[in-house]
Image (cartoon, rainbow, N blue to C red; front, side, top):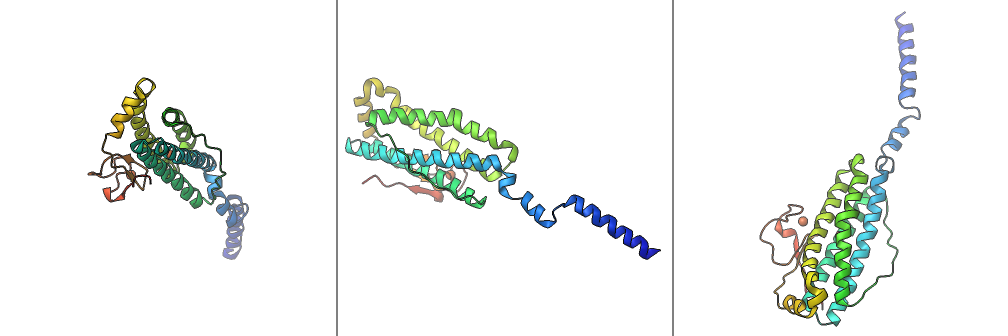
Length: 227
Ligand SMILES: [Fe+2]
Ligand SMILES: [Fe+2]
């Protein structure tokens, strides 16, 4: 009797097991695969990577142009921004790698104008990212709760706010007084530093931990002037 019951129990639990794991243990592995768990997150990270690489390339071009036009401080600021954007792109690339996806950057045409127009374009782009792109990215991934992705998107979003603040200050008067504004900027003493963790960009030597990622100030890297 005991043997019969045990056999029935065995068959019952075997049947139950096949209902819970209809394809055996491999089904569990498939269910927890990042592509299944984080489809929106992966898609947004790819878009964010591309957007940051485009921004990085633009700032590299803007740096060169400002240098040629003999605006060394504006070139210096653009160089710091280009490094910050690259940090954002690298963060996304690393994260995608962890989620089993490789990033491929397809080179795109970059539009570099004169410095006055580049300042206008940079302000518009940074503003668009702060107001539209990043809030939308964050909204689209919120239900999947991939903490690393949310953290990195927040880093980029906050860094762009820093960039926009700085460019806006310059851009505000450039439409009418470009010459005098530039003169003032070029007379300023800048010591650009970028946080290697989050891309935070400041124009003087850090004295406090990073105000975006809270990491120690040793994570700030001094940016050399463009040569
Ligand atoms: Fe960025
Ligand atoms: Fe930071």
